[in-house]
Image (cartoon, rainbow, N blue to C red):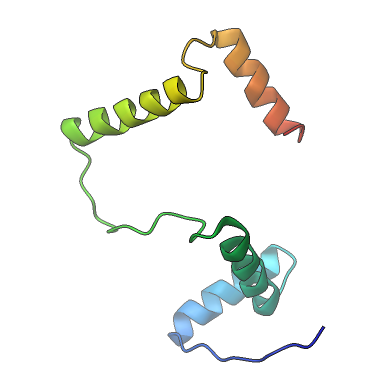
Length: 98
């Protein structure tokens, strides 16, 4: 498959940190960017939340987040799962069954 090349500008310190982290993952920066690009294309979105770094958590914000998660659980039909069922789902994910 034909390949293209592009360059990215970033601060030297950020590049060094990123390169070191990629190395600890057993990949180079090129592979890491390809993993990112494939995830974006597959999911049709940035695969992580982009937000302000110093966001203060408020009671109202936490309650809104909880209510959003609860509404999603109701929508997905899993709001009435028992603790045992939840733990079984967690175990499946940890063992790569999902």
